Amino acid sequence: MDQRRRLVERYTSELRGEDCLATIRFMLSDVPDDLNENLTELLRKLDRVVARLAAIQQMPRSYGTDVQIHSTEIHTVQAIGENEDVSLTQLAKHMGVTKGALSQTVAKLTRKGLVTKRLAPGNAREIRVALTDSGWTAHRNHEAFDRRILSAIEEHCGSATPRMVKRYLEVLRDFEDILELLGTSNHQAVGANQEDDQ
Picture 1 (spheres, helix red, strand yellow):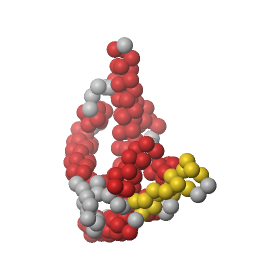
Picture 2 (cartoon, one colour):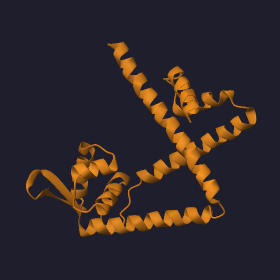
Picture 3 (spheres, rainbow, N blue to C red):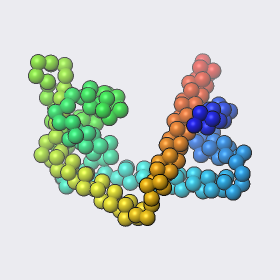
């Protein structure tokens, strides 16, 4: 992994302005043709999967309530349901988001009648959140939705061995590492370009 990381860092430092897939394709230019073709096809498939997943996640759903709930909102509902009567600070840490971003989402969920907010006993600065009855309905229906997706995946991939699944996970982790490095190098490049402009 360290060798791959160094390779990615080298190429991303040379291609700061390129888009992610172009950078990865450039990285594969030294790979033998048959492997390169397979990896290029894998990149195309991954790109299509990511685009389809993004489109699905952008579609709001009601989850059995009388309001439309967006992906970020339902995942916040899930996190609140799994961490009942939690503070905003604790929930933000748990979800890996900023407290400001979470506060905005919680405000939307409160207006939609899915979440309640209250001050913590003995601490007037700490806000605690909990699900309403409608919030619990959305929570249960989202869990059922996730189970249906998982069931479809299991049915479709039923012949996959644990070894194959482990290998898929390794490939996805590798891509995640590459994307993390690309994001970091592009972020650094943007900062460097802004400094150059001043």
